[in-house]
Amino acid sequence: MYMNETLFSDFLKTREILWVGINFAKAKFTQEGFDFNQEILQHYLQEWNKLILNDQKKYDIRMSFRKPVMQYDLSVITKMNKALKVNDVLTLFISSQHVYSDEQMREYASKIALPTTLPYALMFVVESFDTTVKTAAIWVVITKTATKEVVLCEKFLKKPAGIGTRNYWARTFYNVFYDIQSDTFHRWENMVQTCDL
Image 1 (tube, rainbow, N blue to C red):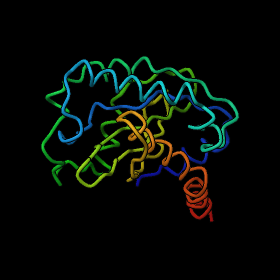
Image 2 (cartoon, rainbow, N blue to C red; image 1 turned 30 degrees about the vertical axis):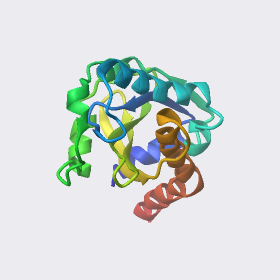
Image 3 (cartoon, rainbow, N blue to C red; image 1 turned 60 degrees about the horizontal axis):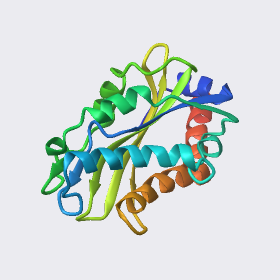
Image 4 (cartoon, helix red, strand yellow; image 1 turned 90 degrees about the vertical axis):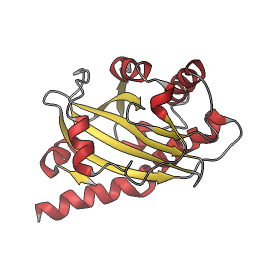
């Protein structure tokens, strides 16, 4: 994982966070389980993003990130997702080379011109949905919107569950939020406190 301790310390003091969506622009899906056309791919990308907005009690950004005020603007990420071609996403297997480092994710995220409505934006960047090992690799990325500096990025590996493609993989997003709310956010806070000592 990567953390800019100074920026994250400032992030902790703010009461607001901007949710910009689930970014699939770097994603790879194993073809087994995702053998579908362009129209169906786009349907699922939209559905997974809609879930976070439509069920904010279940996918609780406010509680997970300790922010009483949340706004959302999915315009940039939606545009990026719509540019995806099914042939670029589907693969027979997830190569070990398709594993982004903290540095690669920082570089990628810092090039995205996110809305500057609030000082800090949150997005998920999906690295892979792998039906072979039944695991999703999802990066949590916090960015300072004015400068595009990455405040924090960390990859989570989560297991899917549920019935139907949408719900099955949506469970991984729920698991990330739950993990952050119950444990990970405390770890992040402690990292900043340790650096201040």
